[in-house]
Image 1 (cartoon, helix red, strand yellow):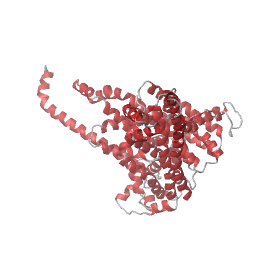
Image 2 (cartoon, rainbow over the protein chains, first blue to last red):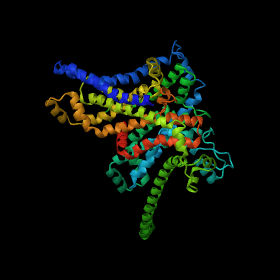
Image 3 (cartoon, each protein chain N blue to C red):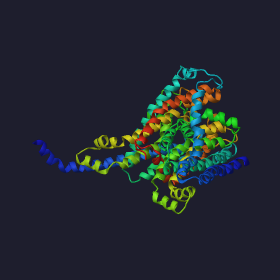
Image 4 (cartoon, chains in turn brown, purple):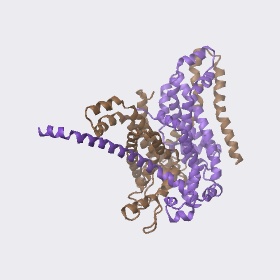
Length: 322
Length: 296
């Protein structure tokens, strides 16, 4: 325990010390140069801690992962494209298919529910209180969410009292057999996806709520005077004005679907046909100790994420973000 | 003609039905909002209630039975704290999170200061790189970082986790702070510069004090991220004596050691700090989320 406290103190002192140890001597060193030279050197002094950090944690791993993905399990010899052949082979196909399901269902369901929440909350006076309820799950770890929903999905054999909330409601309402939510292959992936939806609605609603409040009031009023009903207003005013914001929500959630790990790891650990790319990568890395295939999966994730990366850059470049 | 006639005769009752209609719509709206909140809150409530139920109660009846027959026990918390190592994990989560938050705010602030307040070649390219890096899957860093920190002999300390968590969030942090730093009036900075203030002085005595709210937003977001992360600490700290709450709870959930009720108590302990933060500091959380969303 004392070693932990020691590390805490060390971290709290060392991190600011690193920053000061670069900037202050750097500023002193460039002081003797003429003004113009100073202002060309100064940015690089200030940026150097950040460049070192991002270089180490992002740029170097990016390059190294690409190299490792063409090498064998211990990264010692070149193996060409065989890791990628494996990644697209029959062993990985059901896993990839699950991620496709996540990428389609999760963003759409989250966006639809968050949009309806944003529109409804905008019309009630207790918006802040109601919003807090939707944000609560966002504050928790996916591990905690997974534990909670493992309980919600609890399955007891038929005729036994159902202690899981969902099966208790299901059997009471329909009188049918209880459902093994996490094992039944017809529903288990959707059951996992819903946990992610439950945890992601908060942020998506916040972003869409801000969008709803940005729609000019005159626009809605004008449509209403023209005799437009609620549905027409939604279809021809709200939706088009919100579309860029909805796109932000959809792309963010699509990226999340690519790298989803915690929920699957805790709830099923990939069994019963629920495995996803990120969980598979963890298995390759730590159970099979194969650096090559693990890196190939990481590179695959990068390739899948790259359209969104470039879209965001393009959006900022065209002046949307500043 | 008959249409006009029926319209005039119908007008009085029509009005009251449309009034009734809006009334019904209002009721439906409130019902829908309440249902939404109820569905979203019930799972949290079920966790909270289960932490106070005994193992034998939970194996026979659902958590809602506690409202019929309230027999609270505290043994689950006692067991979680002392038998399953959750007490130790609280300390580990703090040691993991607090330096990460401090470092993220500092590194993002100096980076954003340079990008927003200085003019140099490559500025735009660097800023766009930060935008792109935000979306990178964290899985990409695992293998190279593991090799790197193994070679340095630093695995099994908190240092790799601080550095990786910082590196993954700093691009977002710079993006979040950039807009605010750029909007600080130049007159303020110029006046200080004429008075002979150095750049570090301008940064620490003008820029930072003005940016309290946005720095708080970044800090609370990074606190949530680092406190709640599973993958990075799982790989670099393992599930032994250094494991933070997420790793500890995940391993309890997977091995089923200690039973369901102890697990719920451990889980509730792990979420209580972020829950309190998000309710009390919601303003900063919201600002951070909205400031960080890439606008269309």
